Image (cartoon, rainbow, N blue to C red; front, side, top):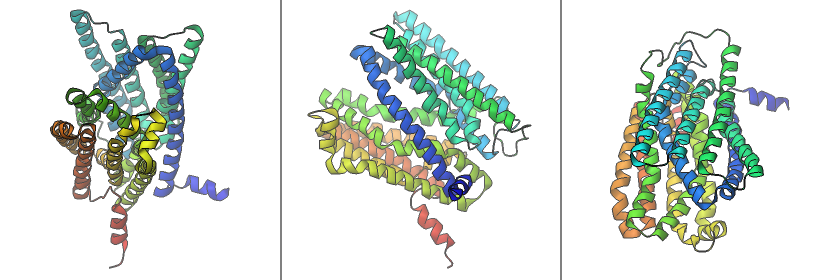
Amino acid sequence: MALLKRWLADRGVTATLVRVASGSAALQFVNLGVGLITGMALSRLLGVEGLGQYGLAMATASFLGIGVEAGMSQLILRDAARENGPTTATPAALQEAAVSAVAIAAVCLAGISVYAVTTDTPAKSIFASLIFCLVVALSNIAVAPILGAQRVVAGQVPSLVIRPLAFLSLLGASSLALPKLSATAAMTFQVLAGTLALGFALVQLRSLTTSAGPLREPQKSEIHTRGRLWLKSLPIAASEAARIIQGNAAIATLGGLATAEAVGLFRVASSTWTMVMLPLTLFNGATGPLLARLHAEGDRKKTQTALWQIALGMTVGVAGLSMPIFLSGDWLLEFLFGPGFGRAAPELKVLCLGAVFNAFFGPNTTMLTMAGRERVVARAFAVSVAVLLLSLGPLIVAFGSLGAAVASSASMLTWNIIIWVDARVSLNLDTSLLGFFDGRLRASPG
């Protein structure tokens, strides 16, 4: 027991990674379980048509959230990680980010209102979507200094536990009184749950700033200049926009060039592939603050060690989840989704192969963003989107949904290679599994 306590208190790279990854994994599993129950509850309360409207509203919220948050939380997180906690520059940055988010949301609200009035389009659920994405953005901004102070697990509690549990509780309470629910009501519940998570995040933030005593003057801060935060975060927002385009371009192009059956098969393959990608989501979300701190300290050896260990965790996780699909993907899809869906196995295997390569290249986007090279990340995603859009049409015409999977994986491989090369050239760091050999070779005597 004493050995375990000593290991948990160890701030070494390996111990920190295991501690952060295991804590984040526990929260992710709770989130998955709550999400599964929530999905079943929504399908019963909303019905097929209502569920479709709710899905559209949530997709709208995801898209609007990019503009509202605009990557500002990432800059505040990176700054706090470099400074080992909040500084005197943090309160002003938080205020500027919050005001910017509210102002952007107000502009979006005005645009949606004009569109709704001029086209006579019902927009209640879209209004709720906008308020929801604003609440989520403010919550992400509030937890950014907490994450940057290396309290990674605590900083993920509002988004992974508080908000989904509150939403599920509201759905459960409504099911006792109402047999059915509208998409607008469901989005309103999301707003209420998000507001509760925001309140929890603000309490955490206050606890962090008061327990640390008087805030220190910043030494390496990039956010001390007022009025520049939103502009500096635009490359991060552009990268997120490119991610959304990548995630939806294949479905949209398939809908125009292929049969409805091909669209359905690819959607099943894509949704299953999202589960396979969970280790990437876990490690990228949990290790950003650590990488920012190590890079700011200028300790290349520790940074390189952290990178190959993260890449190893990603690769083992993704490969492990992909193995059943490579061995018996058709049977697995038939078992999960029903007869006929086993035909999506080839598409899923191609996507999983791309995911394994993605994991092999490690936390490349996170490393470059935490090192202040978000413009390179944005350019890499722009190139990969161009590759995707140029290849989707010909490949879908030739191979149907399988061609869409090939184009998606090729696009993913494109940005991984670009960012991996830039990390080696500009930072002298190898984010991939090859970094293990890099560290060993440099450490060897001769």
